[in-house]
Length: 290
Image: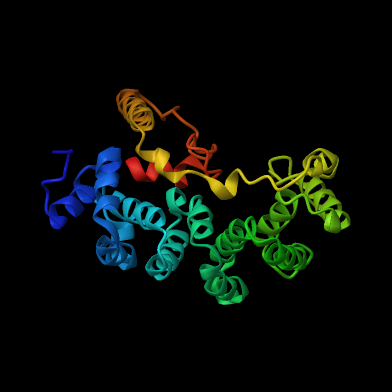
């Protein structure tokens, strides 16, 4: 009998809470084998606000549930994934926010209406609106007519100084990723503005600069890498082992600092997190481990 086939549904779900970030791919495959009947329980996990603030290892259940809903990619997953968008943004869960666009992209045009409403809802906040915009871009990859309309929307947002800079940056990135020559003038202007912000603050990390635009727009067809990420690589044995090594290394560094006399001279928690999220270490994986 294949691994985990003998478990009840409840026992299978319990593994999402107890195994932390060590859930093996066989567990994911068993969820998928059991089919859409598992969607309601996964939806309940991501809809529960309290689940997004649980201690480890229970905290990982919301991440697993979101990944599984994205893998099912059936219409019943739309509302739960919108819940995941809301809570992942609210609680800065980059493990989820980075991959939601790919998940909505797999749902296709059926998700476009709801995501458009999030994008145009200024009360949703720039983070949630940015995720919605990137998700709409993922859908647009397979729908050129929708893509043209979306790029005009992205141009409107990128060029609006009244919008939050984070949302404007996402919009400008969409234009660059789709190599939108129609909006080249706006893209170059945005790159110049980013360069000016960097001149004012040497630590400012712009999304791109005017001197990079020619290279970024070169080539044909969209750069789809971000919008078609394979989030299920999270469950690859090599990825699991890599994470465990990182957690062990960081814990050893913490213990060494605790033993050292005087002020700790360990990691710079304001430095970018090594997971690649772009957020400071103190606001990302350091919180998840400690």
